[in-house]
Length: 228
Image (cartoon, rainbow, N blue to C red; front, side, top):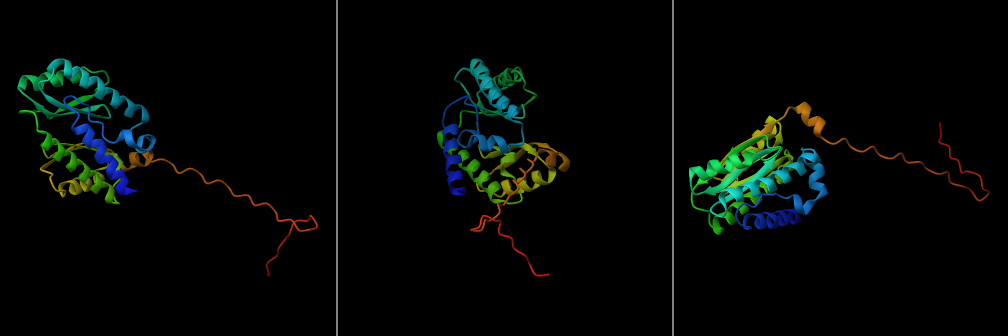
């Protein structure tokens, strides 16, 4: 099952990473559907809102920069991360300003580099790093992998999510130990242990089992007695 999940994740990320400029970076949500959504630490409404922000922001940036840049847009809990490459500092500022004006955006972290667009080989390498990092988080039984959103650009791994300080520190150590990771940037929202308990789903109560009496041939219930 883990191998199937990783394969699907890799395919999803490859499609995202190679789809061209200004494509919102939507990690994983499509292939697991309701399961991923129900276990995310954001509310369902916030998850949908984040997807809407990515689409609207992508459209705004495309209008501003046309086709002269490679920009990835990731929104988590209405906090937007910009990664990729732009030709000039003016383009970098213009992209940030366009995204900041999108409805419901709380903040923008601008990690755009003033460089030529990354190559197909570089983007494929970043995709593999992301897959490797997410697999490592899944393998670590002390972590809840779905609490993290991972973005990789030029070997720099950006970590987003709502996690406790213990989870943040442990996950950072796991990510740093993966091959191909050049640097780790934490854009994590730290929550308390008490808040984490409130976010965790309450187990559904088990249905009470009611046994029917066994009837004898005479139509009377069969009763048993145990020795005193």
